[in-house]
Image (cartoon, rainbow, N blue to C red; front, side, top):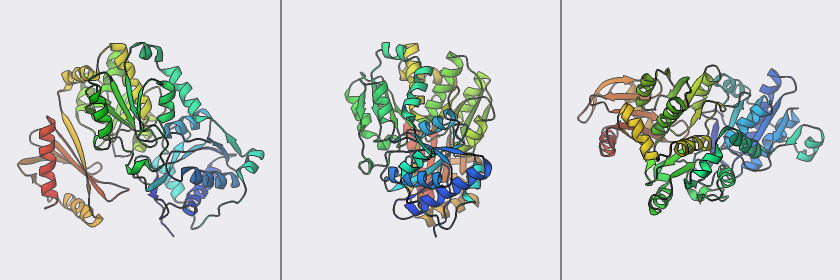
Length: 467
């Protein structure tokens, strides 16, 4: 029996190894029991992304839930994670489930649970589901039509619901009239159809259905988006903004008019700058541990409270559903903003920045310079070291034991251990070391004054860690 545990955002595993229809049925059975234990006549929204096998795994989930008497609202087509979260809130369902492995490599699939409030289920709820996972669960042989006739299954259009939400919240006319040419890379993910609808004249890359993502993990970071970057550069400034999303479209990757990657730290800063300084909105800013301290500095300037959480958007969401939050964000590109669901949404964040450009008539580069005027310029980079699990955990043990006093000539001034190890260095730089929860990967994060210094710092750290 496979021991199923949820990570920072859902359960993910390799298809046909641990991620099987039998194991998905076990998780669905636990979800059904959890819903029935806590609610009378519970309901759940079920969706799936573009990944290989997702429709089949969603069907298994739907059958198990319906068989247990849980009403299911399902979409027949692939959808993004934010669409399921929004649908859960709008339909008044008790929970949402989306079959997705987000940005993981094509060999993975996964299972995310959403709360009734329209965001990731809080850690306590995930634990309650985990505790109910049985050793075995039967997959019903009843066909879906029977459940539909019994009123246990209802088909809905989550994408239409999502598009209507966009139309109600954005000044699409101003964006259209601005003449800003939009580039969009879906990475073969679930955001593709929405962006085609909103921007039929956009320059579109990888906006067709390819369940294997052509072998590329659909994570919107620069090393995975080289083709998109080169495409924008070839247009010689004619594309004003380049937006990329991961497989389930809850993360954003961003490019300026010159084809330069704009990391999530800068995106978070731009959103705070736009929403507070230009739109006059306030609220707490909540960031994950791996986000730059420049956010704290901007919050001090704008007299906004800033809170740091462990890594995993569920921790940010937990604060968003209880408090007034302006922006909540992670280094990985998962960001949420006020007046929307408490959920990461890569398309929504891209539209906010596009609207910012349209209303000011300024380029992304110019807007970033405005932020730099407030908090100073900086450069950030992350390396994912693919190591054996033994070596990965040996390095983490060294961190725990305090064996690193310096990285080459970079003296360590202080260490934070909220989630992983963040080393603040004597020159104002910082390095963070944290293991992936789902892959044999060690993540090494670094920030310095400029790209060359950041690269030098990362190379120095690698030499120390791997020596």
